[in-house]
Image 1: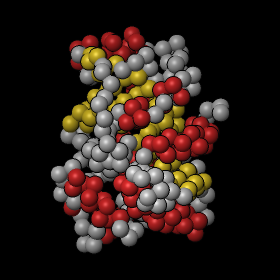
Image 2: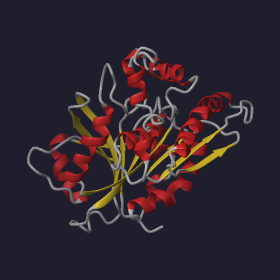
Image 3: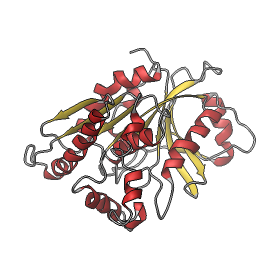
Image 4: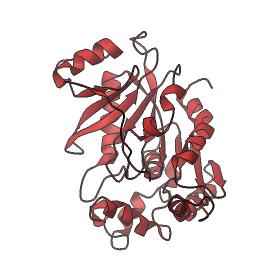
Length: 314
């Protein structure tokens, strides 16, 4: 769970010009009726407003396109989905990491979809359906307008790490690989339901609007729990990391306390995978905090797995 910081300055492209601008700059077909608001961030990076029936509104999606996207108009590309954490947004991966320069020259699309202020990409009991948005509506747009292939991998931090494993477990075969960095991987582990409630309440939302009561609606909580759905991950390359977050290790107590709160959840998830004989690469390290300083390192460590699953030379 990271905090928002000021975003980069950017030039807004009007809705009327969006289709033509995308077509000329990125080789995107400007089909009739498909114009949508877009924001050009850089030579390869843009934000698109995705019309979403699942959310009942347009929602933002940040994309990093391949370096040769315009030069190879018939080429399709695999997609790496990167999910943000709580109290952050779809800009976090480009704001906090070097993902733009890291993917320079690599033939893939990087998609960073919105997951709302809590960063919990699920079908809310009393609200929006971010699961459908991320898994149905965004891929449909990418395939139609950006030549995305059906090959996709997913990775996320914090609540986005939850989303990466929940998506892959609940929809077996949809992703060729999944990686979680300090994710919430057992939503019913001791201490985790109150943490989920706190994340939701911090955004002035009713905790019961997520999945209802952890006790009265236990079946719903289990249905969206990565550990309870771990069997669906069989055959999917997995990477799971997290720190023990011993309070006092660095003097910054809050990130360490948050990391400590998820330690049991991560191990419970990994232990369940072991019982099911589902292979997973884990990196559980002493100390550490719930912050990008560790997540950037873990993304780099998991990259060979993600690249292999996407069919990229590495």
